Image (cartoon, rainbow, N blue to C red):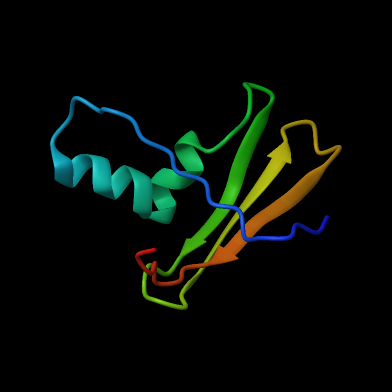
Length: 82
């Protein structure tokens, strides 16, 4: 898929929990594997997350029955203000 301009996605939510607990849950691989799945019949058996600029993230998502899996991955970049 090609687009004429870069697309931007912004996701926001309010979480009623201590910020250090939220950050750990969102950023540490041991926690990512506990919440990153599309439905109850999927799981995330592996995750890596390097939060530095140019650091890579990758989460393996897999059907629990072993029929399919894929890696969701990318690279962290610095945002520039428009």
